[in-house]
Length: 385
Image (cartoon, rainbow, N blue to C red; front, side):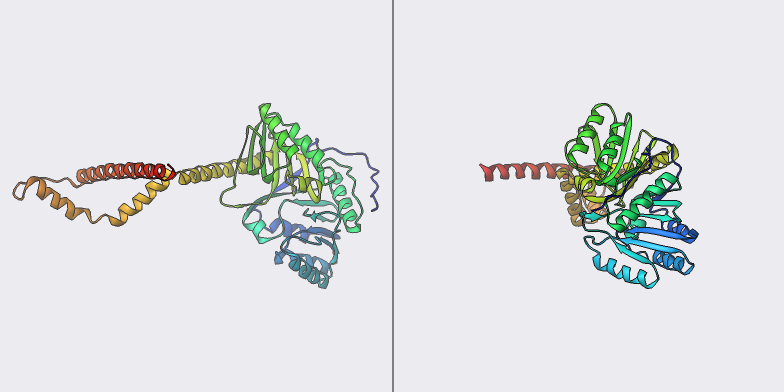
């Protein structure tokens, strides 16, 4: 395989970069449709999954306006290859130039769009209804010239199926520089790391997280953490799908991309991300994270409580009691008659009687649960004895 020559001086991600943040599902399709509509000369787009017909129609309309549209479509994905091939035919019919990714890597999973070779849309989400309407995800738009040039060069090398060599540390490309740059990103944390990641499992990355936690860095993960990273806390996202790989470091530095911190996505697939410094964007992502974290904590707490055997027993008892207990009023009348006789005038205050009945039922249920639990223990001992 040929190697694309890199002649420019290497650029880094430490300088501040102006970006526009996209937050899904809030942003929807409008920023992308606006970008496509703004194109004057060219659109280059990388597609892994796609079912947004509105975006497809916008690309076709751009061709009709004289814009050169070039789509690089994944040669395969796990569940939608038939749809990708049908998409190829429709785009070709609309006048779009279509190319397929190579088969040298396990998967080509990056997603980005370049407009007029001046504006980069770097996305963590696919162009699908599931990712854009029902998932937490992020994307960024930037006109940083060095970053856009690097994205153009990556697009060209993948279209030509030649090897890519990194010349800009801000553009994180698997398997070229992703492991090194993301490890450097984590190692530089001094106070806090907030992470969205469906699967943090790479052993080296988990060790780095554990080291930073031991050094006093607060590490919170929405997603899944596999392996031991003492001091790092992970919760499952509640209420939405999770389809982003995003990190915020110390309220200043941000990573958004398609690669999880797992071996396959760092070392064997084409994944694309961006590292940049922007305090305002970092603050916005952190605010979204805090809301998601609160919901995730609540969900985890409620699930733990519902999984508690005593809670399950109590709920079952309550259902049985509610189903079996008859109307209270006739019972109260009968009991009053039995206790005080037919002729004695007794004033019954409904609120007080209701409270007393509730307390009595609670005590009776507690006693029944204790008895049932003791019986269950004795039975288990007898069976195992």
